[in-house]
Length: 310
Image 1 (cartoon, one colour):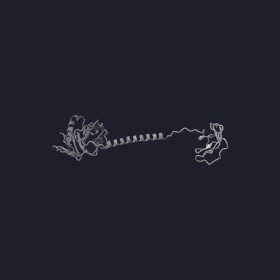
Image 2 (cartoon, helix red, strand yellow):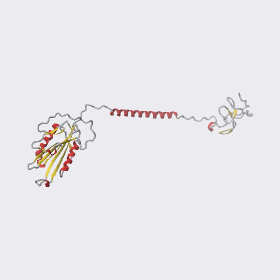
Image 3 (cartoon, helix red, strand yellow):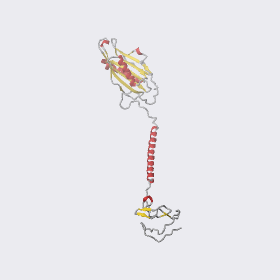
Image 4 (cartoon, helix red, strand yellow):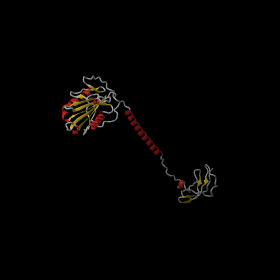
């Protein structure tokens, strides 16, 4: 269906011909039909109503969409979707990389923690590095089995305990005052006093350092004017020994307690030897200061005899 118009009239504001004659009767707009549009206001003044078509209510003389002149097309907005997708993809990639690094590190630490140990590594009997006065209190692994001793005591030897024997040096006499506690010997002095003493005893309640310090405390309580030097680790002279510790001390017996009414100075040495099975054997010995150089070698021979039986 087509609309009929009269002769062309003067041109409109955009070079369009205005229809002449009465406007067509308003009809219900539909597909392919024209209907009169409302009076529009153009950018350069009022214009006649334009036809309404299927696409919208504004004619050529009215305002276009969004309040712009007819024929105006707003700039096309760029979509943010690609940028959002790119950012999301980058975040996912970074997360995957971090996850991979964490898995590698975790697996590496697990492998190190569960790695095999060398079963053929033999423990060393000698302390490594400089000795310390504060050994570690942490356990050093499984306890070593009790050594199987094949030692046969020699004639004249006295058992200290647990298969450890001592050979008394010439001139030293057994003191049975503490016969149930190790082996105790004294070196008699003409006139009824003594030149010194040697006492070997054992324990499993202390390590070498602890037992030596314990014996030093006992001497401090039994004697007067006791001076105890700083203890020290010493080399162990037998493979069966794991820790060896020594403490030097001196003591003075006041003149009021001596027959000669003169003070007596004693020089002493405590040595403790810890075996692999945890048994500690210690020697507590002392000599008068004036005979120390003469008789100390005999104390050394008694200590060595204990080493040989360990």
